[in-house]
Length: 246
Length: 246
DNA sequence: TATAGTCAATTTGTATGACAAATGCCCCGA
DNA sequence: TCGGGGCATTTGTCATACAAATTGACTATA
Image 1 (cartoon, chains in turn blue, cyan, green, brown):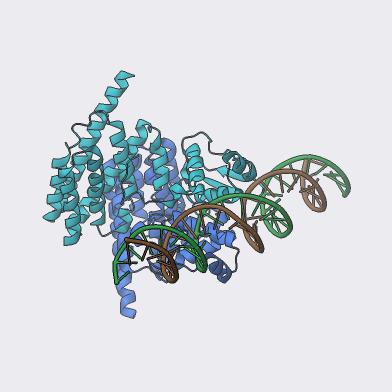
Image 2: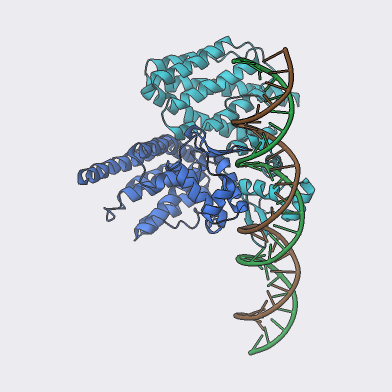
């Protein structure tokens, strides 16, 4: 897993016991190992099998319930809910879905989301960005320029897109960063073979930056859309290649 | 509070103890009664003041932590996080923000989100909808046509927009329904005086329905955008009116 | 036989008390 | 002045007990 210090919160959830349990159960559900409609074993049994106390297990269940994955009812048990109820935009749920090489159609959905969100965000940023927000974007861009390793590039890339969302001055839009994060993460996973040319999208980013600097919403929208379309195309080339291998 | 039986889950969270506690603390935070950076009283004290056990309180804190509102650390306490970390798209967080007559700029942000999401969703639905999904949308439309009370209208309206999101075949888009729900809810709250003409947007909905039926993405996009722009304009008229009163 | 009502078993919900672990701070010593 | 050790504070985890809700079976009754 990548280390995006300032994005991935140090998240005590990672270190804590209940965090592990939540992660484990969450993945079981999202990956389909336990299917919607099924009820989990009773808490005492489940706690024992996971080697934690009922307290820790229950905290995990509560959070999963808040994410819409399960519903606990007295006297019945914890039933896995239908996908329709899942909090699909939750960072954890997205991560769980992307964890194990997501199916192509899910990647397409991620891309569709980006194509809707990010061009609109770039346009809004071009309209409303403050000087400080522009500086944030530029800093991220410079970091991409300077990146020597794939890891450094990835972090700077994420920071760039986060900064654009931030510049929209709309925190609701910024909360969609989790989608971008999962999307980019998956992208780098799926196209890990050609690590060499990871800088190919730099010109696209430059155009977005300049459009936002000059406060040209339509130019920013187009530049961002082109960037996403380009990376999507590159991803599909990789798909075909790996399918041929198989 | 409206009753949208099939949207608002019966949500044991409403009835349960920890649910009340979560709601109470969540509102305190989102409304700004306790500000980011502050630390809550220690669990024992807080539990006592809310008249619940530490167990129930901790379950509430865990969920609030999952929503990004607070962060608990051993030996320190539960610190309220900066708005940047909040899970802004979470249904509860949105509801808490809209609970107490949200400021104009937040309403604008909701509208901006709708203007980005829903036209794109309508276009996608026009491209990919199945016959069954179209039927869902039509059913909702008929219910709007037949609605005699504001309550019936509101429920059908929500159902219409949910059906459109569903017809995109992209569950990520559908998860943004919480935004539409909060937005419409707030809209009806703010424009509650002229209840009489609640049906004025029916023609807009008709255009969206027909465009999706005929699989015309661009027409669907435009119709949806026009609908949102129209309701936004109507909302702003109301704002001015109520400002004049004050 | 059908039906309503009661009871018992099961499972989650809540409370309580205890201790482990992490953090921050003061104080002491070099 | 700086660094480390220990102490107080607070959350993290565990174990146990009982309350509350749901289910399903059983029974009495028409």
